[in-house]
Image (cartoon, rainbow, N blue to C red; front, side, top):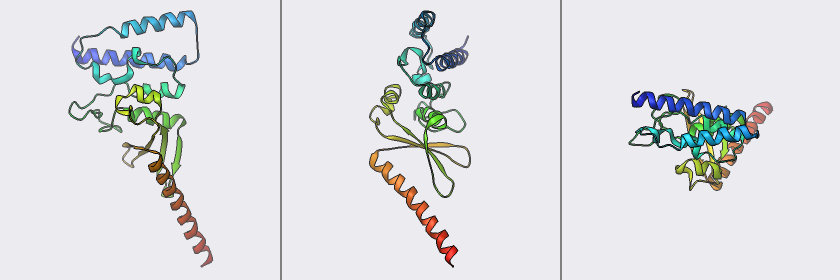
Length: 193
């Protein structure tokens, strides 16, 4: 087995592990506890694979004990992405190419249960809070806890993410409200004229 096959195998196993975790959120049994211990023990073995770091936070032994179903779904979304060694951004072609590894996580959560803000032009933004859990899973977010991940998908299908503090997010919300008010005001003038 070469290193590419090893990475693919680890990615497949991590994906299956996350599918099981997601399906069993809230479930408890002695058999499940034993299986989790066994998987964690296997996952903690340091495999001599140079691409192991590319798998990011999806290693079973790094997962917190308690995670919501949405967080489990979001974490599953990060499995299998390669990072550009120079930039640390996602190297895989597709909707997340060139974005930080946490963007698929937030995107998946946003699609499952995130708040949305829609501007009058039809552009929709998913809003997901940056939680302590996200900060512990993604080192790049350690100092971003409490901010909002504001995600959008371009007409070309690429997803982008901005992290906004409370003041930036309030301005963003105000801008959206102002645009809706301007559109309503313009429509009222047209009806009068």
